[in-house]
Image (tube, rainbow, N blue to C red; front, top):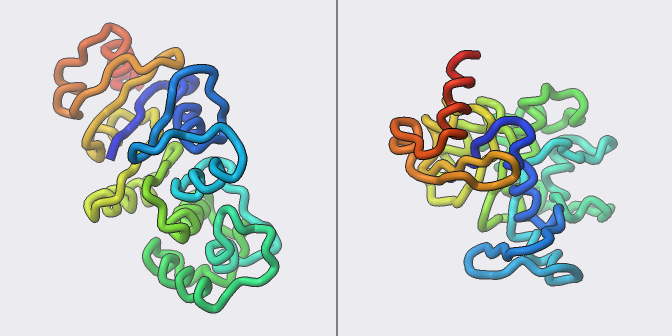
Length: 207
């Protein structure tokens, strides 16, 4: 699990969105599992389908229940029919994220953290190779760590140093839209190499 750490406006969320193809990059190259990010067309759609994303806003279909939103998946919201197999899978995923009892509710009836968990279940329904989180709240963050322990690759954007220290296998620090440094949590939080990283950690400690 990699955390992309930085203050609000540092570009960590934008980086995650660029990986999904939701943000157009001007230069450079993005690859996931060795596959370059296509620029457009069906190849981009297939590429994005292999990446699970849990971003604000969660973009649920308001007239569908939580179960139906998970069963329909992120890229099939326009389909009117949801198969019995998709419903069974959705129930299992809602059980996994701790929302089984809310399956028949509507997304707008959930708390923000519950919505993030539901969005996680929806992302997992696509069997992603990579799962991206933007500013996970505590329960989704704990679930992310469990998924990483099971072997899933995760990338999480956060402005919370304590979370990055506890959860990450690697920390990528961003400032001003650039990656300033990256290292293990032990190294980053003990001997940060740049003035910007030291200033960020000092300000966070003084909150």
